[in-house]
Image (cartoon, rainbow, N blue to C red; front, side):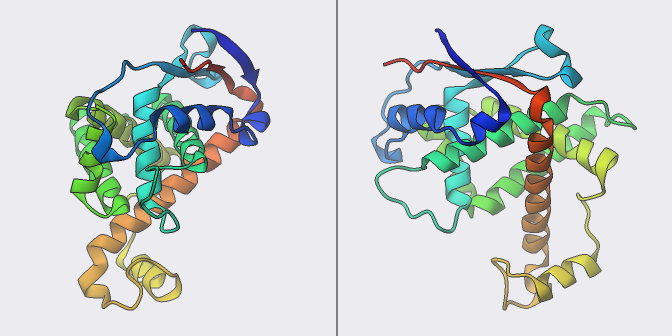
Length: 237
């Protein structure tokens, strides 16, 4: 494994190096996946607020590919075809993984209990299922990348910790009021537009919370700016 280049955040935003490597090496049709390749490190990153260089984090190829599949499944413009995700889906997944990892490391006041983290992890899974339009689609994506339940649950635990930080330390966003949901249903275009509010309220809430969390994580990632040290590694041939 060899470091090929260190990117600033601004350079990363316009780069397709990582996405191209991952798409070309891992984006096969789900039904054609019959073996699970050895995993590999895609990138290493750290930031001062999470311990700096003494506490680096790593992006693994199979987990990133799984998350790119989820992004593609949630993208209404993406049609199933030759590949399950595109370069821009990988980029979105990468940025979300980094942003959530950094947020998950930050102190929360009050500190959530283990039970609260477990409950929010379950909710994070439910939010993802809503985004990809079905539990079967989520677990098929995991199977295609060779991820087991424990590996997937680790991702949702990361999302849970990040969302609890955002909800308690930035702005409440995990429990929108009925009035707020009704306003969204009436004024914004959603997957549930045109349907009776009472019938879709639960689904609308999950969709709306997931959207707010995505936007907030993306904002944190962008604001990390020069604080973030990110190094890509060469993909195996």
